[in-house]
Image (cartoon, rainbow, N blue to C red; front, top):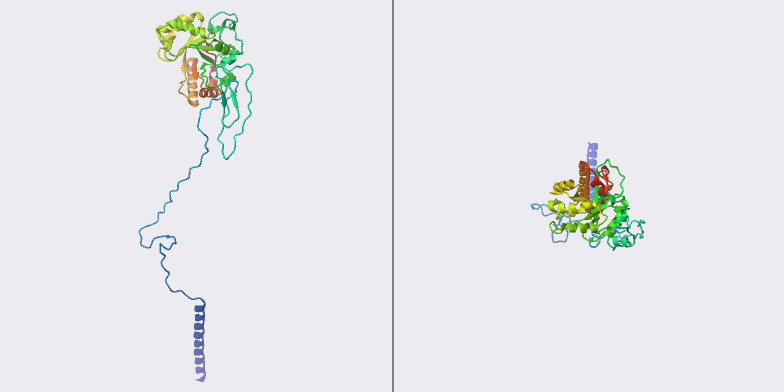
Length: 386
């Protein structure tokens, strides 16, 4: 009995000591780690802290879409006005260099002026001027045909013919030894004095040049012929169909004495009028000139009149003056080549604007140009029709 009480009293004492120890440990922990039981204060929108979201229960939901951000425009360098610059000159082998836009403070490097004028090849009908490309210290001199002619002794037409008598289309024709089995195409150019013709001269293509016949152009015409290019006398625009036709034609032939052919004006066309065409034939036939008009209504009648009179005749396709795009001019040249392939011959007429010259130089290297033989205009006129 005594042993049982002792064991029961010891257990109770152990429980008491355990409670005391637990209470003491709890108090120590509360002292070391006090607990803040006050509720956290509400954050006011006016407290200066950013409001992340409105109070619970608000129907306003922030827009999840990305905000519109305007991309800032990049600052472009001021390169000045886009002015047209006349390029090239007599003796040039290509157009004058153009200055590129300076970027990131780089400076355009000046190229030294190089004289590229080949010997004994005068420029044809280009005005005197100096062309300076912005940003480059290079000037390109341009020489006129008159200046070339003044320094060149030119033989009169009778001496150019070397005493050989015959029609002008034979006496003043240039030598040709190309491939006569191909369709033939003649290119006749009227110089507008806007760009150097030297790149065309250097190309070696047998181009023919139309010289205005309303003024005395014998020196210019003979200079062109002396350099190996055929000349065509170009009837001026506005020539009368009714008054003084014979006198005018005689004067035109005298102004351009080494011409192989007489080329009609586009408006009004003397050769597309039956009466004036008859006068043109009667006046020019004794000199042996070929006749060229444009492919328009009335061409067949003019061709019939020329054939009946035994005069060589041709019609030309004209590249419009409004075409200032290289690709469109190349398309026109391709069309002329197609006509040549169909009719075995073709003539195309254009003015020497810078864009036209650039297009011609590109087209000469094309596969389409290789399908035809580019010849002097007299060769096309003398080729029998199909």
